[in-house]
Length: 400
Image (cartoon, rainbow, N blue to C red; front, side, top):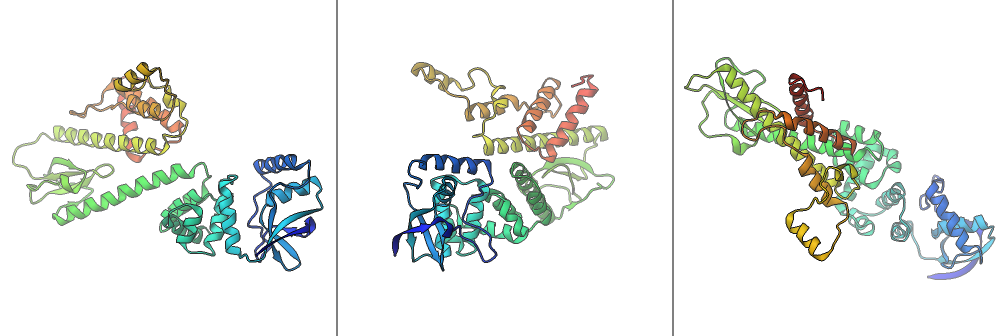
């Protein structure tokens, strides 16, 4: 049941928990929220009260704000003493938190504010309910709960996306520490790297299990007399006709080199060279995959540094012809960023021989620097490939 009453502004307070913490009001110390309240007060100056009434709940001899914290702040700024409000007699803390989250569709909260509201609702309701109110999958709410359990009160100052990332790595103390101690701007980059490392670790575990099932030992030191046969990057790559004494040595990422006794005579230098070339190819594959995956997650962001790498007309022939016929001008944006990846992501290693191509090595390093400047964090394989490329350029007398 609701009623309309005239109340004294001195009797109106934000909702508080049992410790006196205000948890359904914005952080009015921020520049954005201060400006919002001032603009609200300016719009209410003529009447001194808002057009949309504040909704309150009774709490003994005072009132708690269900909806309208900013309006009450604006009225205080105007010096309003009394105002008419809607009094909701049938409300609960859970419905108050839900109302705060739904208010997010009217005036977007700051990321940390929104996160606090969702966390508070999660203390009162199950994952499915919280997910329905907040517009997210219940599985992500579950991750938020896990994150709160491992970072405790620090969760109050973290965005939902950051908590979801922490929850994803809740069983890895080092990853949690890294994500919890970074800034909001850094956590996505760190989470991307942690995901890549986890994926590599999972693939390595899968590879070593497949090798063990075939009776192939993984070793750091290849026994004397065994020759390099081929590289393998997935269980499907392991051939059926390997020598009975075959062993595997880890190369980079998910690649393993297979060694064993072979009938024909092998030149040790040529064998070492072939193993090195195969390893380089694996480094490039991991580098290219990591760059493309990063861009896929950031393509909507303004990235003029990438746009500058594209031609004046970065689109393919069919698109060029279509826009010309219809007089359409396509804006700079995601298409340019994707095109820049394919134009700038030159392969420094010959596809077939594995030899380094000096003409492409310089552009490879330059593109790596551009991506780092945009927040991309290269995987270990790319760092190793950059080192190899730099050494090659130095040996060629190139100081770049």
